[in-house]
Image (cartoon, rainbow, N blue to C red):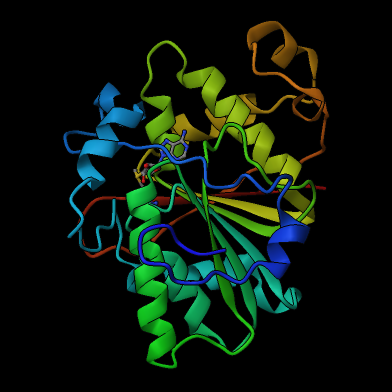
Amino acid sequence: MACRFCGFRIQSYLLRNTFRSKSLFHLARSNFSGSLQDEKLSQLSYWKERYKDKHSKVFEWFLEPGEIVETLLDRIQVSRWQPLHYLDLGCGLSDLSLHLLTQRQQSVSAVLVDFVPEALHYQCMKFKDYMDQGRVPLKSMQHLVCADVKCLPLKDDVFHVVLDKGTMDALIKDKVHGHINSMLMMSEILRVLTPCGRYLQISDEDPDSRLPFLEKLYAADSNMFAERSPNVNETTQKSFKLSSWKFELLPSCSGTEYFLYWVEKL
Ligand SMILES: C[S@@+](CC[C@H](N)C(=O)[O-])C[C@H]1O[C@@H](n2cnc3c(N)ncnc32)[C@H](O)[C@@H]1O
């Protein structure tokens, strides 16, 4: 498979094992800026406008990869998995996944998802630069998928780690559908995680508010999806068991507090 923008070839043999269907590149768009309270953050049009600039440079929503990469590697328990199958939901223009991919001489198969193709194009070019510089471990690879995090074109039980840096935060901003959209995203995360796989979420919301939200987000009561969303399919209704949520304060130079939340699929 090749990136439609730059023609850079993306290795496809793992894609066949990883993705549910061949029609992966559902190309969509989006736009952004503004405060974290802004409902626009939940909208495709907002991100489309933000990323339409072809000369977009790296943009970290919050926290620089260098500040948190070691903490994340510890939490991912990278050496448990060989190779590590890793999924970044809402990658945007963040370099975090590339940092994780190149930090260790361990093979990583990374899948980056966003619903804005321009963001994926940026990731594609950046990965190519790293490859050209010999910074990517030999057997590591990156796959790009343009899709909605609420309906992932990915197979069940594939990923050891799912990372979300600011993406559920964005979905929550939708005043009407924020909660159900977050539930659908969570349901998809649990579906694609392997047993013992981890979901890691980075947010600026403090644990007093975020933990009760996360705990309520996934109840092993499949009917709640059927009652509340038309986007229900058999896999959405499947129930999974989870560990309890844990969190820690992340190191940050900015003066703002950011938190890492994580949970395991049992
Ligand atoms: C707050 S930004 C975070 C970007 C990146 N993770 C970072 O840390 O800089 C949220 C990202 O999620 C993407 N996004 C938001 N809603 C999405 C959805 N429903 N499906 C796929 N991507 C989505 C946006 O395009 C944007 O790139």
